[in-house]
Length: 146
Image 1: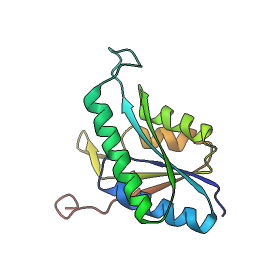
Image 2: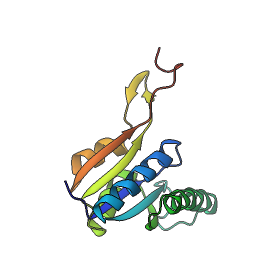
Image 3: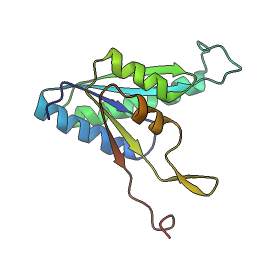
Image 4: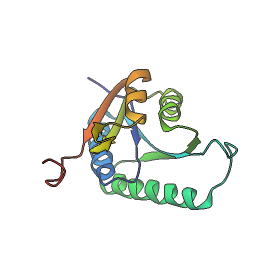
């Protein structure tokens, strides 16, 4: 399979580093463009264009880190700091805008009501993606894997 445009979703999790490295490796082999997106979720009580400085700084820091990893991997990337009510729809829209034919998302083990959960974003992207989606799973830590 050949890819021309790869969208990587980052969240600040440790797994982001691996997803960015993998996307860059894949992009080099396919001569593809890599886009990296971070989504700030804006609470419904605030206007969508509200500037929450602490969240903007956090997002810019995460994107700068991802850009640095890509640079070390010899890959040029475009980064985008998005603001939305929910990450899933924002990532789908970003994938459409950049013409992504692959979305790569890091996934970490989490629970909701004591059960394993992928959260809300990953299922939304899997259901609505206009292209292939790859989940980069972070291995379970021993204390979680009981």
